[in-house]
Image (cartoon, rainbow, N blue to C red; front, side):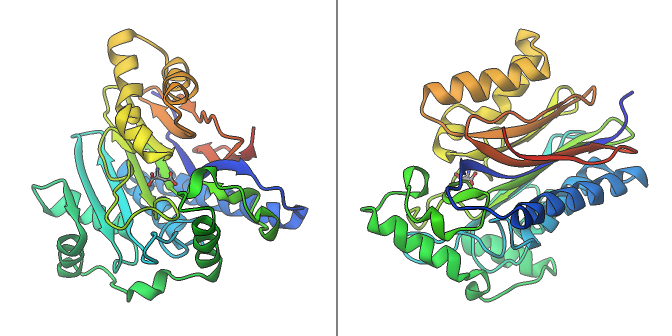
Length: 319
Ligand code: ASP
């Protein structure tokens, strides 16, 4: 059996045109390394894959460098609506929340749904009520406000209402290695534990200037998140509508299960062929039941890292 292993992502996108100091880049590398190490530590102590992905995504939500939880992007209407999902490959149980604006850590709400409800996906106020009833920390919606994301919304709106992706303005203002106006704000984790169980978790603020009420791929099982001990655990980041229409995360599992592809072949086919053919941009992280890791992306960069228990974390931003 493979050594336990964890992989994480902090979103994919285009390289910033800003002159980046080595010091700024180092902040991202350090944060990715620290969070991979936190996941490795959970697995090394015999923790479950489900706990490792939940906790690493919570850390990514809390880290201001990554755009989920605090620092999430704005909708067109100037609000925040966050989505998150977690799936346990052992049982294929899943929990998800969509369109929430008062839950500090949406991934913990998704986990509470997985553990305490026969339902899979809660939206909006019902999700918030469920989270509050299960003792999760609630915040005022302005908790998620950051000036950078607010300025980013105005730049996107000045470009005649485009949603984040093709927007190309003002990257020079940024000291984020990936252009914040052309980067996806999702975070995610996948893991294999010592018992051979897989799990996946994904959390997002969505896409800048999205319409209020829009829900992306992140909380949709099989699109933004999927885990099944029989095959693979996957967490996606990118143009959510295309990940939904291609059922991207599940497609990786299906290609392994029904077409006999390896993890690398299956994830490359989805990211480099099928998503691209429909205009989808982004990437995914995946670990199969043998402990193989794949981190493909078709954008210029993806914040990413992985580590087997006992090894040093391996992290990257660009190709
Ligand atoms: N996939 C996310 C969404 O469409 C965006 C992202 O990955 O940042 O909401």
